[in-house]
Length: 455
Image (cartoon, rainbow, N blue to C red; front, side, top):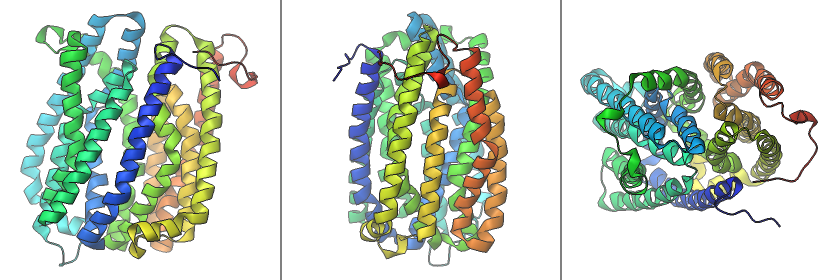
């Protein structure tokens, strides 16, 4: 068995994956404890509101305008070339952009919040306090706005291929979050206070990590006025728009479902849908662990024209992702409903068809994610961005049409159909085109036979 040194590309990926695995095991283990605690403390309807607010507030993340993802590529390129000045300039400009957007949106929301009927929007009964719903939504919005500049942490660390530091911060935030949840339940606090005590810990951990990394580990990155550069800002925005559109599409896919289910079927029906979605998400463990580390490694290899490494790694990742996802989905179909009943209670158990549909989506999403990771690292996302927006619009239309006829199954069904129709084949053709036109060193990727990996 070949060992990879931490200084090698595969070694850094392995270090990130191992720390990510530890973080994922810890966070998933804590979820096994925290989710049923929250469901039982809040009840089905209030937890449905909690889950809907959590997923809906993620829309605010779109306000980073794709800058964070662009920063990963810029830092990776600067790291490959040893250009500390460029890295500092891009980080400073990204921080100025995201911080300014967060502050501006915060002012707008402060004036708009009182005029929104949150209880009616989330379709809650009189058993749930309207003010409690409003304050929970405000807390979620505040945390998400703070997370805009804090979100640069993982992207900055990824660019330097030191993602393990962010994974450690995730562990600390997750531990603090479950402790905050338990303390809040013990003190019988209200839902908005409980939200801050639990969900807010991850944001605060990310902020602390960013400050320590820039001030201590990489002091040349310290933001200063002299580094603010108009051309760099325009470059970030120009490159970021395609990432922004992809993020919009992703938020529509992953965050609109609970809102549609809540509006048409009632808040209590969000619980089985949301819990099932989270359980099925465990099947995507490989891409969630390796892709954040693989993306900057691809970008660095591309800057150094190491195309052979990119080809070999892409093939290994595709095979591993599909094999693991198929195995996980098979296990979920056999034992998923029983596990959910024991874990989160009878009110969270989905139908067999809903579980199967979500499993199908995880397989489709896994295949597409492997390709998307490569396209993002090479900054070849313009066509993908347009197709993603079309698929997102079709997803909403199909979900709204199908939910009235087949319930929650129609919501996930709309997601699957839209992506199969619009995205899967075109995106694969884009990837093939990239290999032919830009990475045509040696034999074509799709004719490549197995070869020994290097790193």
